[in-house]
Amino acid sequence: MPHVSAGNLPLNSMCCVCFKECGHAPRLCDFRCVWCKRTLHEDCLPQLPEECDLGPHKQFIIPPNGVKVKLVGIRPRRQTVVNSVRPPEAADWTPLIVIGNRKSGSGDSAAIMGTFRRVLNPGQVIDVNSVKPEEVLDWINLLPEYTCRILVCGGDGTVGWILNTIEKLKLNPRPAVAILPIGTGNDLSNVLGWGATVALPIDIDALFDRIARAKLCKVDRWAVEVRTYTRIGIPLSPPKSFISNNYCSMGVDALVTLNFHRKREQIPKFFASRYMNKFLYFSYGTMDVLERACYNLNEKVSLECDGKAIELPTMEGIVFLNIPSWGAGVDVWNLNRGAALPQEIDDGYFEVFALYSSFHIAQMQVGLSTPHRLCRAKSATLTLHKSNVPMQVDGEPWEQGPGVIRIKFDNQALLLSAKGL
Image (cartoon, rainbow, N blue to C red; front, top):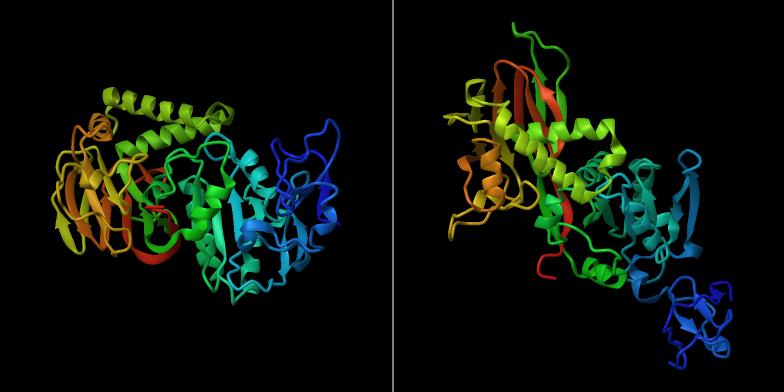
């Protein structure tokens, strides 16, 4: 039988035919199916069906006899991706694509994707650093009668990258996205019930069960247009456009992210640990308590929300928040609000609040302070009148010169929520 291999069975393996222990002899003995991972004695092999049913996770697996693959990427990291698919006869088939980013968090992605390749078709497991997401996701259009699911193994930046690709390709039907959090912040994953971090080794059975039972949900996405001008009001370049899923900000918290990003670009190997990354975030935040590089930001900017001018307090930062998680897990908008209505991720509104200082951020991280809430809005215009100020959109920072930042609703993404599972 081509789908079984001899020997190297896991400890305490049980025969799927006679339900007795197998693979315990001091030699290469007995068999294991390479697809469903069932184990059995050599004597029981004739009772195994000629074709594998792909096991308990068959609804996620692209059958090996129903797919053609192609090699893409650059050597030595060329990978196989799906070129064409012949769907199986199963009525509840929802193929799963696992997309990882080996640069996220502690660099655990390579080991995690190896785990998935042992269960799924290798063509379903892709590293976005070796293959463009467009080449991976384009084949979903070959299955218009089936709803695919995508598992993103990465941080908020990787999730945003994949959501942008889905929107760009206009996939129909639109695939639903689940998240395996291996980044540093993981705010969106935390909100949707997938957790703020992942425990290794991964329990594949438990994870696939949660994906199968997860509920569909929609998340608002916001278009951020940035126009930069000279001191006399002449545009420097065409406007830049971003899409925000979590939050965008200007000032002190963006400064911490920018300092971290610059240092990571210089010595990337030093940032291979998630815990080291969080420690460095804390260190840069502590440095700014003394430096106060964004002091009196309110004198440099003006804000309009839904066409109304907003009075700004003395502040060092301003945040436009889409989800109830900020700063790696803080439900900042609802801090000390009692029975107030919870912040929603699909109501067409974002929340705006001000930050007094880096010390104010640290206090909110431990629940000892609250944000200066400004408003809820459907659109905003933030004008930076003078000097350069750090800014970020979903953890991607830069130094922004005088200009105008406009935020408005763009679309809604389709994701999977594991809350309560």
